[in-house]
Length: 312
Image (cartoon, rainbow, N blue to C red; front, side, top):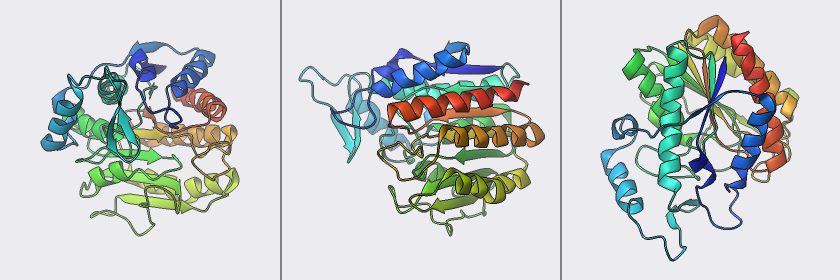
């Protein structure tokens, strides 16, 4: 069974007019979910202890002090970095995004679901342990990995990231972890400027695949099948977490890759097959980017259809 975790706060997270990470993204996500006919459960709030698995106490103090109780009556949003904003509902949405990541781990590790998709925004893979960045407040995929290790004694966890942007936050959290593996394909050069092939982590548990602008689905899939997935297969992880960004889609305004819905479907199917062979805990998928609404909806629908194969 594939389970969806979501909450209406994901549609209330505010960004400035014209910002690509806009509330309408959530409507597109809901349309894709409705078409897949999957059961949904409310995303819970993350605890402070869960956030501290990745984020520094000083950073969390700043976020909570800045956002809790702030008077937003003048309509102004708080700017946390160059392109990361928060409004009156943003903290709840971000907390539920991190909480959903942890609950998703619980659901697959307990056998209640074969795969889980978190339909929460804002995204998470750019948030570093000590700062918000790139639309992201909390590093959801990394939090999920550390939660799996702490609560379920999972020894080896992999995060697979196919967002058009490199997940610098996840990489930073995993840099000195010998049993947490990170594999990413991403356009380069592109924001945030990290993700070179020479960035391997202290224990060679990180593998980045930079892609040139204009890369199509054939080359994208070949990179995963020939380089990234064999790396993860060799690691023999107990749990696979996906940073599921759909801004590599050919329609997306923030990237220059030429990936189509069927390519996301094919990669997801490959990951499901890998998980069936090597990951006892199944697959957790967390929404990251995707800023063209049509591209997001079609790619996510394809992703969910393939993810459902985990239970077949």
